[in-house]
Length: 218
Image (cartoon, rainbow, N blue to C red; front, top):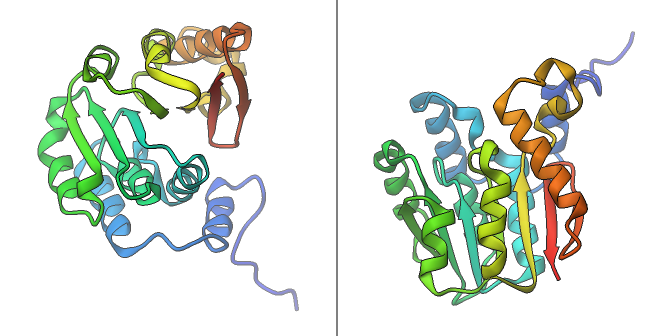
C-alpha cells in the first residue's frame, strides 16, 4: 500500500511551502500570532512576508551585518521584526509605511516585539523622507508600490553606502512579468520597467534569490 505524502507535488505552492517550512528554523510564537492577526484583520494579509521569507531576511542581515537598514513598506511589521532579529547590538532598522491607515494595527505589534528598541517605525514616503534622516544605509529592503520601484530605487541609491545591498521584493510578480495577459497591469508594468532598468545599470552588481532580487551598490 503506498505511503501517504504530507506534501503534494512540486507544482503545488502550498505543498512546497509546507515542505520548506518544516525544514527551516521555526517561526516563533510572536511572529506566528502577528501573521495570523495580519490575515484576520487586514484586507491583503498575504502581503506580509511570512515564515519562509522572514527567516531568509534574518539570515541575510546576519550575513551582511548592517549597522543601518532601511525598509520601504512596513505593512504589518512582520519583515521589520525579522530583520531586526538579525541586527547586532547597536544596529537600527528604519521602516516606512506610506499608508497611514496601517499605523493603528502595526505600531502596537512593533512596539510589543522583543526587538522594538531596534526599530524606528515611521508613517510617510520612504523615498522622500529617508534621505532627510542623514543616515547612510548598509542595506535596504524595498517592498512598496511596485509601480514606483524604479523611482524609489533612484532616490535610495545615493544613501546606500558603497558595497551596500538593496533587496527588492516581488520582482517576478508570480511570473506575471513574462505573461502577456498582464501587459496592461500597472503593477506588472512597473516591475518589468524596474527589472529592465536594473539589468542595464552598470553602477551596481545584481542577482536573484527565489524570493527577492538583490543589488550590490558597488
